[in-house]
Amino acid sequence: MRRGVEVSVVLPAYNEADTIEDTVRITLETLAEFLPADAFEVIVAEDGCDDATPEIAARLAAEDERVRHVHSESRRGRGGALEYAFREAHGGTLVYFDTDLATDMRHLEELVESVRSGEYDFATGSRWVPGQEADRPAKRGIPSRGFNRLVRLFLRSDLLDHQCGFKAFDRTALLDVLEDVEDDHWFWDTEVLVRAQRAGYRVREFPVEWEPKGDSKVDLVRDVLGMGSQILRTWWQVAVSPRLTRRVNLAAGTGLVLLALVLMTVYLDPTAVLAEMRGAWNAHPELVVASAVVYLLSWPLRGARYRDILAELGYTERIGFLTGAVFISQTGNLVFPARAGDAVRAYVVKARRSIPYPSGFASLAVERVFDLLTITALAGTVLVGYAVLDPGSLASLAAGFTGARASGRVAVAVAAFVGAMAIAVTVLIVASARSDRNYVRAGVGRLSTDSYADYVAGVIEQFTGDVQRVTGTPAAFARVGATSLVIWTLDVVTAVLVFAAFEVDLAPGTLLAVGFFAVSVGNLAKVLPLSPGGIGLYEGAFSLLVVALVPTVAWETALGAAIVDHAVKNVVTIAGGLVAMAWLNVSLTTAVEESREAEAEAAAETD
Image 1 (cartoon, rainbow, N blue to C red):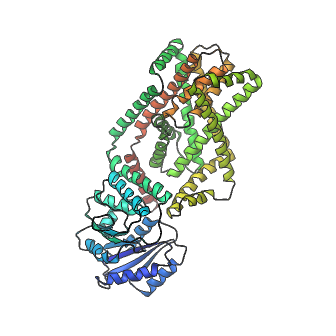
Image 2: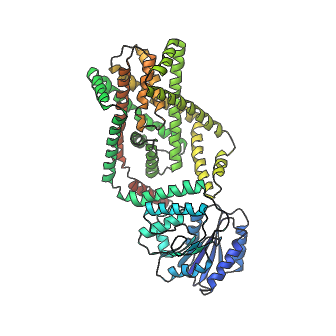
Image 3: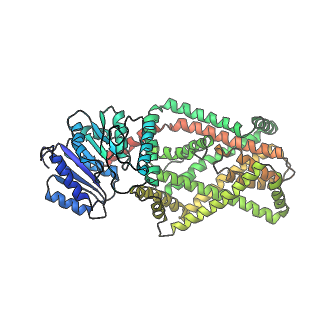
């Protein structure tokens, strides 16, 4: 180790064999112009290269004691490679700039001395500060300005240019900020600057002359998926989560539940809802109560099924916790369109049980596949039964498509589409599990040529691999499928009990068959996120099927039964969601903190 090193310059290098030697030479010459020879070092942070960069860096380090080579066997990402090298550096002032030397090196002394003098803790060159000279072509300038505006808007940064690869840091200040930095790729330096400002460190931004080197283009995976998601993630962590105390979280959860109830009146006539509920309750209240009890019994089974899915992915959890997580996510789905509540479950299992997000979302995907397969199979079985035993009913069903309500026709069309897609997706997943070809990485590669695509492809591969692991194991497929069948049978029994409360004149067998078909098609119809909780779509499909299959049942009766059936299920879901939110405390701030503490404790136990 060289003594007296004050400044460490890190050059992040990934496959830079053609330029790294000249870059190191120019860097050494520039530093020597204003620093003593023993006061600086140049570190080549070689990030898992597959060209000759490692050999060149090793040779340069052997030839000049001022040069060091920090090697990574695998890709750490741009930010990860920088952070690793900075922790290995000897200097109190840490510097990095891009190896293409796009920023004029005459600014290097100003950059270094801004921090080395003690006047600032962080310093960054800027291509957008008035007074700078940067020849920015539109395909670079427009995305850059848009990105920086979003950072200033969402993250309340005072800087104009966060991504300029020309920065210096006080070692102590940087290591303090890095405790909260999560990104390890292109967003790394933006997050460092944002968190430094919020921590109260002195940050200097000064104009630099900058000239683009080589070709560049907007990258779909890196710029849209990567940078956009990181802005939103950081915004949540620095601006939203700190305000989510337990009291605020419970109040917000209660408010969202009330909003779900209000939304029910938007998609349906509230007077009709109340009238039908009063009629059913006055006729046979015990059947309505019994339907709620039957539906409630299906929830522990949902937790058990989720346990079995996670077990196949290598995670062992208790049914009670998982049932609560399912309750919370389904309550969220009643409030938000596009099934946004599913993300809540992924957050809960990640924060409380450290299950990675890809596995969390994969387990949800497996659950959805089995749901769709089960209700598609139920609908198909009843349809075949009607075709064999009562061909005339199918003629009535066809007539219903032309004479019934338009919403019902749309809902049934949606159901048919969703059922077909469910079968196709399942066949595709199972078939791909038996294939040796890597379709994911090839597909992502067509969208992006940036190194960030490797990271995204890895996440998707883990996701699809988890899905394939469950669907490709015969025993797990059978066990989860059997549980799904019981869950949806209880869902049908709930609807049949409600329907019986309306005193329809149908034989028990016919009532059960109609219930299976109507509930299955109704649930398929509400899969597409066209309204929160599928409100409206479910009722339309349910009513159309009942009226078409049993012409003696009036439309008003069928619609009333569908309304009450769906309302009973939503009330049970909302009540369970409230209890689960209070029990698990789903504040993301608390959850993230607890997950970090759990990881730290686990690491301490293994040391």
